[in-house]
Length: 143
Ligand code: CMP
Image (cartoon, rainbow, N blue to C red; front, top):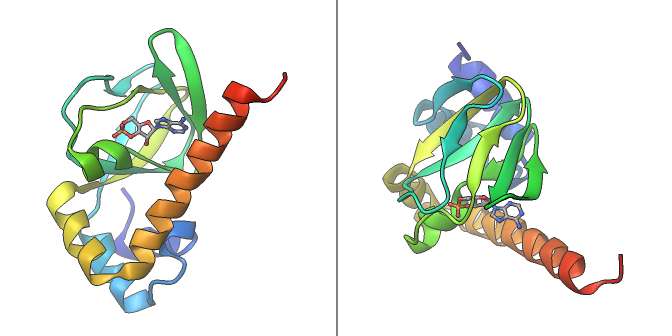
Protein backbone atom coordinates (compact mmCIF):
# COMPACT_ATOMS: atom_id res chain seq x y z
CA UNK A 1 0.00 0.00 0.00
CA UNK A 2 1.55 3.29 -1.10
CA UNK A 3 0.97 6.28 1.19
CA UNK A 4 -0.09 9.67 -0.22
CA UNK A 5 3.43 10.95 0.50
CA UNK A 6 4.89 7.95 -1.36
CA UNK A 7 2.59 8.69 -4.32
CA UNK A 8 3.64 12.36 -4.36
CA UNK A 9 7.33 11.36 -4.36
CA UNK A 10 6.68 8.94 -7.19
CA UNK A 11 4.67 11.46 -9.26
CA UNK A 12 7.36 14.13 -8.72
CA UNK A 13 9.82 11.91 -10.58
CA UNK A 14 7.55 11.38 -13.56
CA UNK A 15 8.44 13.65 -16.48
CA UNK A 16 4.75 14.38 -17.09
CA UNK A 17 4.46 15.97 -13.65
CA UNK A 18 7.92 17.56 -13.39
CA UNK A 19 6.54 21.11 -13.76
CA UNK A 20 3.63 20.63 -11.34
CA UNK A 21 4.12 22.16 -7.86
CA UNK A 22 4.17 19.88 -4.81
CA UNK A 23 0.79 20.98 -3.40
CA UNK A 24 -0.92 20.18 -6.72
CA UNK A 25 0.81 16.81 -6.82
CA UNK A 26 -0.68 16.02 -3.42
CA UNK A 27 -4.12 16.70 -4.89
CA UNK A 28 -3.33 14.45 -7.87
CA UNK A 29 -1.92 11.74 -5.57
CA UNK A 30 -5.22 11.64 -3.68
CA UNK A 31 -7.20 10.83 -6.85
CA UNK A 32 -4.94 7.93 -7.86
CA UNK A 33 -5.45 4.40 -6.70
CA UNK A 34 -3.12 1.48 -6.61
CA UNK A 35 -3.29 -1.78 -8.52
CA UNK A 36 -0.98 -4.79 -8.15
CA UNK A 37 -0.86 -7.50 -10.81
CA UNK A 38 1.07 -10.73 -11.12
CA UNK A 39 3.25 -11.74 -14.03
CA UNK A 40 1.02 -12.60 -17.01
CA UNK A 41 -2.11 -10.82 -15.82
CA UNK A 42 -3.81 -8.60 -18.39
CA UNK A 43 -4.45 -4.95 -17.49
CA UNK A 44 -6.75 -4.51 -20.49
CA UNK A 45 -7.24 -5.91 -23.98
CA UNK A 46 -6.91 -4.23 -27.35
CA UNK A 47 -10.44 -3.13 -28.36
CA UNK A 48 -11.71 -2.64 -24.80
CA UNK A 49 -13.33 0.69 -23.98
CA UNK A 50 -10.92 2.73 -21.86
CA UNK A 51 -11.42 5.37 -19.23
CA UNK A 52 -8.30 4.97 -17.08
CA UNK A 53 -4.73 6.24 -17.27
CA UNK A 54 -1.95 4.14 -15.69
CA UNK A 55 1.55 4.77 -14.36
CA UNK A 56 4.05 1.97 -13.79
CA UNK A 57 5.40 2.21 -10.25
CA UNK A 58 7.45 -1.01 -10.37
CA UNK A 59 7.89 -3.93 -12.74
CA UNK A 60 7.31 -3.96 -16.50
CA UNK A 61 4.34 -4.38 -18.82
CA UNK A 62 4.21 -5.49 -22.44
CA UNK A 63 2.26 -3.53 -25.04
CA UNK A 64 1.06 -6.00 -27.68
CA UNK A 65 -1.04 -5.76 -30.78
CA UNK A 66 -2.14 -9.21 -31.93
CA UNK A 67 0.99 -11.36 -31.55
CA UNK A 68 3.43 -8.44 -31.97
CA UNK A 69 5.16 -6.79 -29.02
CA UNK A 70 4.96 -3.05 -29.71
CA UNK A 71 6.85 -1.86 -26.62
CA UNK A 72 7.86 -2.76 -23.09
CA UNK A 73 7.14 -0.12 -20.45
CA UNK A 74 8.74 0.15 -17.03
CA UNK A 75 8.86 2.32 -13.92
CA UNK A 76 7.66 5.93 -14.45
CA UNK A 77 6.15 5.12 -17.85
CA UNK A 78 2.54 6.07 -18.56
CA UNK A 79 0.04 4.08 -20.62
CA UNK A 80 -3.63 4.18 -21.51
CA UNK A 81 -3.50 7.86 -22.50
CA UNK A 82 -4.74 7.27 -26.06
CA UNK A 83 -8.22 5.89 -25.31
CA UNK A 84 -8.50 8.45 -22.54
CA UNK A 85 -7.87 11.32 -24.92
CA UNK A 86 -9.74 10.25 -28.06
CA UNK A 87 -12.42 7.95 -26.54
CA UNK A 88 -11.55 5.24 -29.09
CA UNK A 89 -11.08 1.62 -27.95
CA UNK A 90 -7.73 0.55 -26.48
CA UNK A 91 -5.14 0.42 -29.28
CA UNK A 92 -3.17 -2.47 -27.75
CA UNK A 93 -3.26 -5.11 -25.02
CA UNK A 94 -1.26 -4.48 -21.85
CA UNK A 95 0.04 -7.50 -19.92
CA UNK A 96 2.20 -7.65 -16.81
CA UNK A 97 5.63 -8.98 -17.85
CA UNK A 98 6.49 -9.57 -14.17
CA UNK A 99 4.77 -8.63 -10.92
CA UNK A 100 3.81 -4.98 -11.31
CA UNK A 101 2.53 -2.15 -9.21
CA UNK A 102 0.50 0.53 -11.00
CA UNK A 103 -1.21 3.78 -10.14
CA UNK A 104 -4.35 4.68 -12.05
CA UNK A 105 -6.40 7.83 -12.60
CA UNK A 106 -9.94 7.90 -13.96
CA UNK A 107 -10.76 9.87 -17.10
CA UNK A 108 -12.93 12.57 -15.47
CA UNK A 109 -10.35 13.26 -12.77
CA UNK A 110 -7.56 13.41 -15.34
CA UNK A 111 -9.56 15.71 -17.62
CA UNK A 112 -10.17 18.05 -14.69
CA UNK A 113 -6.45 18.43 -13.97
CA UNK A 114 -5.57 18.52 -17.67
CA UNK A 115 -7.81 21.52 -18.26
CA UNK A 116 -6.25 23.31 -15.27
CA UNK A 117 -2.60 22.51 -16.03
CA UNK A 118 -1.22 23.34 -19.47
CA UNK A 119 2.11 21.74 -18.43
CA UNK A 120 0.39 18.40 -18.13
CA UNK A 121 -1.11 18.66 -21.62
CA UNK A 122 2.36 19.47 -22.97
CA UNK A 123 3.76 16.45 -21.12
CA UNK A 124 1.18 14.14 -22.71
CA UNK A 125 1.97 15.59 -26.16
CA UNK A 126 5.66 14.85 -25.51
CA UNK A 127 4.87 11.22 -24.62
CA UNK A 128 2.78 10.81 -27.77
CA UNK A 129 5.46 12.48 -29.96
CA UNK A 130 8.16 10.22 -28.57
CA UNK A 131 6.08 7.11 -29.26
CA UNK A 132 5.20 8.23 -32.79
CA UNK A 133 8.86 8.98 -33.47
CA UNK A 134 9.92 5.52 -32.26
CA UNK A 135 7.18 3.81 -34.26
CA UNK A 136 8.09 5.74 -37.44
CA UNK A 137 11.79 4.93 -37.03
CA UNK A 138 10.99 1.26 -36.47
CA UNK A 139 8.76 1.12 -39.52
CA UNK A 140 10.89 3.06 -42.02
CA UNK A 141 14.52 2.87 -40.95
CA UNK A 142 16.70 0.03 -42.19
CA UNK A 143 17.20 -2.63 -39.48
P1 CMP B 1 -4.49 3.06 -25.21
O1 CMP B 1 -4.77 3.01 -26.68
O2 CMP B 1 -5.47 3.71 -24.34
O3 CMP B 1 -4.26 1.56 -24.70
C1 CMP B 1 -3.10 0.87 -25.17
C2 CMP B 1 -1.92 1.68 -24.78
O4 CMP B 1 -0.66 1.17 -25.24
C3 CMP B 1 -1.97 3.06 -25.47
O5 CMP B 1 -3.08 3.77 -24.98
C4 CMP B 1 -0.60 3.57 -25.17
O6 CMP B 1 -0.51 4.01 -23.83
C5 CMP B 1 0.23 2.28 -25.33
N1 CMP B 1 0.81 2.25 -26.68
C6 CMP B 1 0.17 2.14 -27.86
N2 CMP B 1 1.05 2.18 -28.88
C7 CMP B 1 2.26 2.34 -28.33
C8 CMP B 1 3.59 2.47 -28.86
N3 CMP B 1 3.81 2.44 -30.18
N4 CMP B 1 4.61 2.62 -28.00
C9 CMP B 1 4.38 2.65 -26.66
N5 CMP B 1 3.16 2.54 -26.11
C10 CMP B 1 2.12 2.39 -26.92
